[in-house]
Image (cartoon, rainbow, N blue to C red; front, side, top):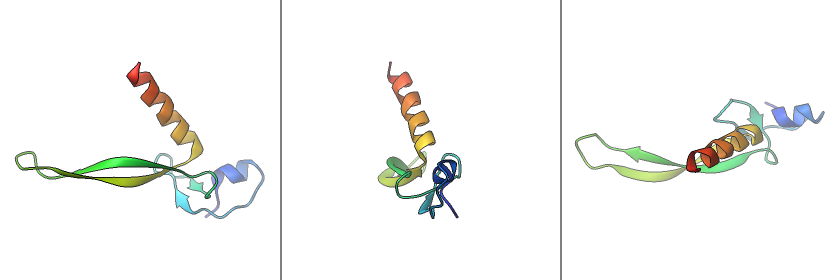
Amino acid sequence: MRCLDCRTESKDTHSVGVCQGCGAGVCENHARITNRTVRHGSPQGQCAQAEARRVLCKVCAEAEALTAAAVTL
């Protein structure tokens, strides 16, 4: 798989991951690594949570950052 963002820049770069937002292949330069909280448990019992990695492309990372900023206003 090749990096979609590199392809739009007329480059040919192997992907190191897949964007969890749009499914595009991303290289190490275009990948944005974010954290997300994963919760485990049942509604009646105790819940546990842990931090997990999330890979996004530049476009999806920027869109999520704008959305998060709008929500906090």
